[in-house]
Amino acid sequence: MSGFRPVVVIPVYNHEAAIGAMVAGVRRHGIDCLLVDDGSKPSCARVLDALAAGDAGVHLERLPENRGKGAAVIAGLRAAAARLDATHAVQIDADGQHEAADVPAFLAIAASNPDAIVCGAPIYDASVPKGRLYSRYLTHVWVWIHTLSFDIRDSMCGFRVYPLASILPLLNAEPVGLRMDFDPEIVVRAHWRGIPVLNRETRVTYPSDGVSHFDVVRDNVRISKMHAGLFFGMLWRLPRLLWRKVGG
Image 1 (cartoon, rainbow, N blue to C red):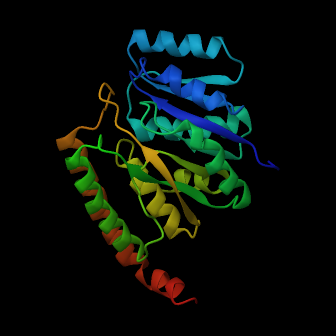
Image 2 (tube, rainbow, N blue to C red):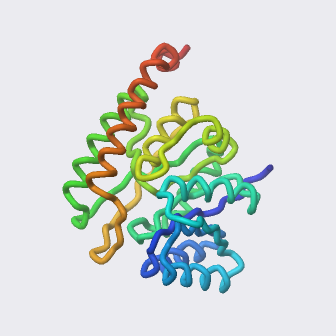
């Protein structure tokens, strides 16, 4: 593939009330989007069918059952490359917490740095749940330990741009979490491979009527197990990481 051909990938699981506005916000910038239906209920599936049928720039990938956010994003990244010949994929959540107006700014950074992941660095307002906010900082500390750097400002933001030429081989070669552990794990493993990570501030709002599928107990346990695995992975890579850090 040559050139710069981005597609916006949106994992969707029962977000029928919010997805229309998100798609409209993306399409306002003339960028194609790929909706990944992660086994949604029939009412949501019908909304996604209508969005795809009503706009040639809206594409639909459907998973037969719910597999988790990470699995949906992975399916979307692979379909973006295989079906739409995309070079880059913008991941953005379906629930309306991210600013679709920032997509062009993220893509401008990616176009100038085509080998880099562009990660959202959230600017929160008062709507952010305090428990979620504090737990994120714990993950940030672990990610800084895993990478021996502060290169990744926020590993959990679901708004980012992936260079598919380097991310798809990573996904084919290494196990990555398939649920809420996907976002932090993929960017740490990418950093280990030497894929540059750039950060772009973006406003994040938690809608009062938004649909969240973060399970406080199960997903925190899953993320804790992920950090344990990444820590031992860091120890195995420690000589190489230290050598990179000193400029070797």
